Structures are given as C-alpha cells and as structure tokens.
Image 1: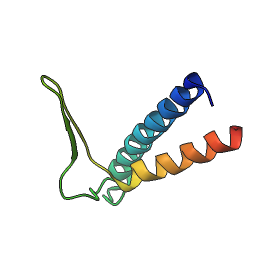
Image 2: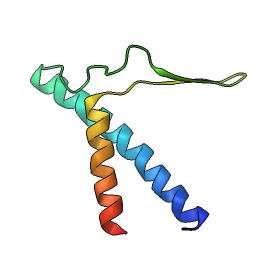
Image 3: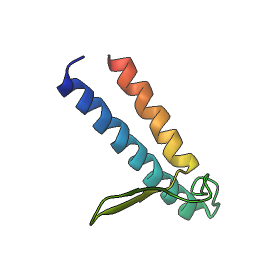
Length: 77
C-alpha cells in the first residue's frame, strides 16, 4: 500500500466518522430521542499543540459512521 492510498483511506475514515456524528444528531433532533448523540467518554480526547487545541468526543453515531465507512472501504478494496 502506497502513501497516497493510505491517505485516502484515512481521509475516508475521518469523513465517515464525522458524517455519522452529523447524521446521528439530525436523527436525534427529528425523533426527539438522544441515544445516538450521547457521549461515550467522560472527557473528550484532546490534542494540544502550541496554538491549536483539538478535542473530539466519541458518540454511538460516530462509531456507526466509522463501521459503515470501514465496510465500504474494505469492500471496494
């Protein structure tokens, strides 16, 4: 696997996770049930650089998006 293909897979995984989180929030707001947007961790995962601070929280919807993305990426080959 070359670097370009690995970068495309990593980008697909990141975008699939974000898409899953967004779809989960939309579904929760439409149906009024907050199951898919509940936080699974006590605190967000943090990455602190000198000027930039990135925090990410894991939700069931983001995990579903990750699984769906991995399925499509592995199916495509």
